Amino acid sequence: MGGMIGHESDLSISENYRRFAHLETAGRSPAYQELAEFVAENMTILQFLGRLAPAKRQPNLLFAAARYILEEPADPDTLTKLIDERGDDLAAIMSERRTQTNEAARCAILLPALALIPGPLALIEVGAAAGLTLLVDFYNYDYRGHVLNGLDADAPVLTCQPMGAVPVPGHVPEIGWRAGLDLNPLDPSNPTDVEWLSCLIWPGEEGRAERLSAATATARRHPVEIYRGDLLDDLAELAAKVPTGLTLVIYHTAVLAYVDEAKRCAFAALTRSLGAIWIANEAPGVVGDAAPPSPSRGFMLVRDGTELLAQSDPHGNWIEWLA
Image (tube, rainbow, N blue to C red; front, side, top):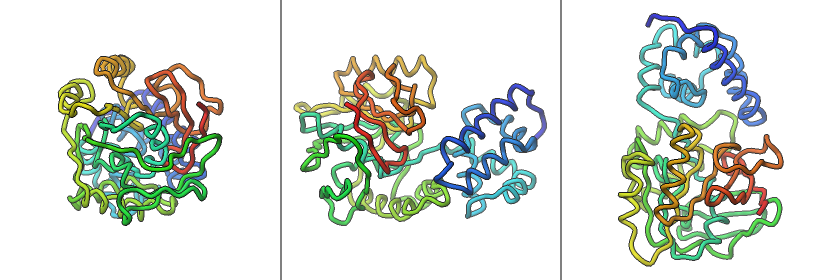
């Protein structure tokens, strides 16, 4: 694998890994914080990343692909050795796979927003991966002692710390139809796909592996159709399948950050043309013009592109209601 990357490219990739270390993994995964800081300073690994397509250079993707090969989280030594000895294999997995962090606990963030919408609902999730966050009504919830039972008593309990006047509902919303859209759908009954999802979990984050296991078991009991397609090219065709009499809700978490501004604007216009209610759970600045009160406090939950509902933990651990 020959070739070099220029100084400007090195700097861009290096800064991205530094940002990941300081803003995302700090306080959550010391092992990945150390690894990201190491990558940011390692010219060999930066050159390896520079030979990949820009969309394939993300820390989450590199660390998950390394874990997929190594069968355990990488550290600076094992990652360096892996790139030296099996760089082509690692690059192939990174080119084939995507960062599909299908964290079921994000449903605890989506639930209050969905419960405010008159039902019954028809849900379309773009970037649905294995569909774990389409099962919002099947999970059980605990908002600091406010317990809410879903439709499946054996589904995991999603624990979320509420702050502010979170409108926690008295019951899960009625959902009459649901489907997902993803460029690379995952199957919760396929051990290889479930293994990939497990590789996206960060070391040091307690409870996520157990929750993934319970959530994929729930998904196998309640299969959801995930269609292969693009969020612009194929969304209208999927929306046409929605039965009459249902309120269409199109939603996503950590998806639009991976597409350019023009595509984000086109997607916003498309959701409006479909008459859908649009719920976005994304990093600050990705959707809407509202500035978050605390820039470093996770994701922003936005309705219809303009109404800031809440700030939330990217993995569903807390929600601060702002609406």
